[in-house]
Length: 263
Image 1 (cartoon, rainbow, N blue to C red):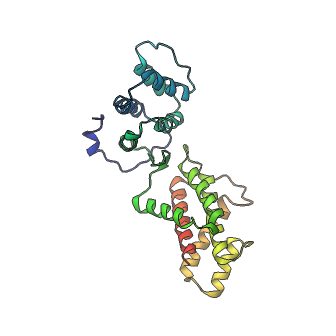
Image 2 (tube, rainbow, N blue to C red; image 1 turned 30 degrees about the vertical axis):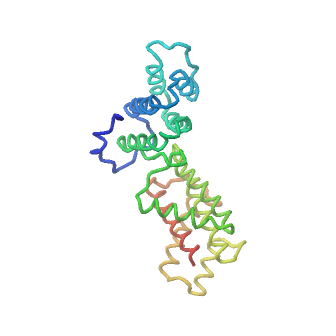
Image 3 (spheres, rainbow, N blue to C red; image 1 turned 180 degrees about the vertical axis):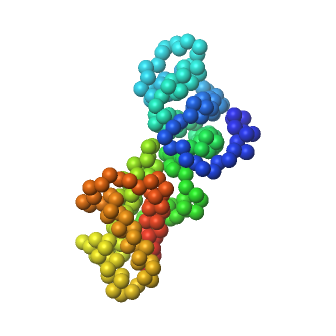
């Protein structure tokens, strides 16, 4: 069994706030997890090949016969790697895992990430995604689904770019906010049949026909104001939104996208 098979049951996995580090303990437990998976491969375990893949993916020239063995060399180089490269390695190794162990690999990696309060999980697409509360995660997935219609292609492209920036290591907060809002504006243009309008123009038309409540329109206006004041066209001030404000903006815009899609 993997090293967290017992203690992992009792870890407090709330507060997944570490997004700029890969603790040494996490790195070494990850090495053990990789060995636990690969040593059971039905096609055999080529330890030298694993060693070469890991070191070269970390931009380190592998030794033909490392002192103290391959496992020690892997652990040493993973421990010395910049924290961002450690997470690159988690993704890189996912592509080498035997098919029968791919689900288990993701589960074991995610157990480790949760135990160390890391802000990402390894998804079924073998990419790292920022952990969100369950209900919000469902909302994000729903936006991807709803924007799947051909007419929303431009909005979907912006939304994908925004979520990629949101999930990035470290997070590209300004790019995330800008692209998520671009997705909202593009969606509103399609639904409102106003291809050359701004989001403000669209809100003006909604006010005229009183399609939405005054309070709902006001909340959408506040998102538009926030975007214009902090990162949209003509902004000259540095991007100053706090991480929790970025979370709020991304979630709020995602909800607004669904609002327009379903109008």
